[in-house]
Each structure stands twice: as C-alpha cells, then as structure tokens.
Length: 236
Image 1 (cartoon, rainbow, N blue to C red):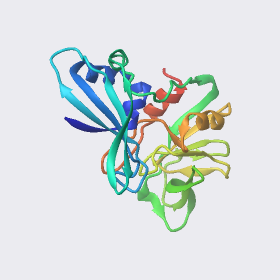
Image 2 (cartoon, one colour):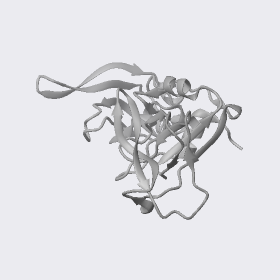
Image 3 (cartoon, rainbow, N blue to C red):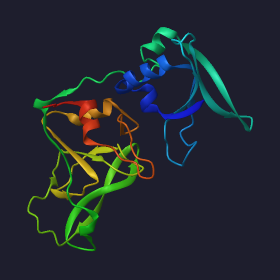
Image 4 (cartoon, rainbow, N blue to C red):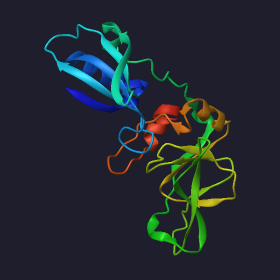
C-alpha cells in the first residue's frame, strides 16, 4: 500500500505516537520525500509511504529516499535507511527537533479576529485580513474595509503583535505587525507577547511558515490549539 502524508506527520514530534502505531502495525518499507509542487503550484511538503501489512512486530528497516526529475523522467533516489528500533520509537526521518516552549508569562494573549466577511464593504473602518502576499519569505496581511458592525467587542491588532494567516493556501504564514491599531478578521490569529516573539518564531519556522499541522481539504486552515501546543506553554 502507498499513502501520501504531509511532512508534519512524517517529521513532526507531535505525531511520534501515531508513527509508533503505524510502525507496529505495518512494515514501513520506504519513506520517499516528494517535490513541493507535485500536487499544486504551491509549495506543499509531503511524503509517499510504502507499507506492507504484517501480523508481527516490524522486522525491517525503512529506506529513505527522494523523488527527483532527471533526464526527463522521474526516479527515486534512496540515500539511507532508518533502523527498526528508530521506526518503532516513531523516529522515521531526521525531522524537526522539539521546540522549547515560550512560557505563559511572556505571552499576553492569543486570539482569533472576530469580523466575518459578511461585514466587508467598499468603505468604512479598516480591517486586517488573510492574504497570499509573501515577499522574501515574509507574509503580509491584506487590508479590507468593514461597515455596519454594532457589537462593541471588536478585536484589534496593534503594533508589535504577531499576525498569523489562519486560512487558505498561506495558512501558517505570519509576520510582526508595525501599523496602527486595526480591526482583525476571523481569518487571522493574533499573538500579543511581552518578549521578542518574532525572533523566537523565526527560529522555529520554515520559509516564514509555522511548523503546525495544516488541516482541511478544499480549504486549508490551522487552529489556535495547534499553535499553542507547538510553541506556547500556556495550558490552563
């Protein structure tokens, strides 16, 4: 059997227990990294996993390889093997190392914007919204307008906040906000901190994108819980 899995499942420490389960129930014969544009124009990191069902504990190591296009044809180049013991421990490839969590004392608040697209208009109050604007691996929110909002519990972003794109093909991309106080749409997550969160997140991002599970099929999205579990020690 061949399955296609996102890189977060194969590499991320959050999925170790699931990889252990797979390794105990199947022989993992090969782990093949696929090109980022194999399924779309966007850069989506994924693997092809070749499995064989077994009724015994895994007994063979897995071949680690990469699919490459060479001389006008595709081929898989195998470069190493992962031992049985490492497979059973959930270590399939040398992936992302565990991230030291930022303590809750350094995080003032994390929230999702609460202005939906139903209130968008051609004029009115400025609002920060999701976008696909990425320049030099730095994401930037778009700016829209909203009108007709009667609820006073509006959520705003202010200078120094971290803005995270929550939904769409740029889900997980983020940047530090330097502008004036503005409303935030429900497509953006805001992290307000007391320490240098920008430097911390840069260190533990890949090409400007947070290392968190990307969910959804037709529409990609991320959840606040995944960000908190991965980066911030603020569990209640």
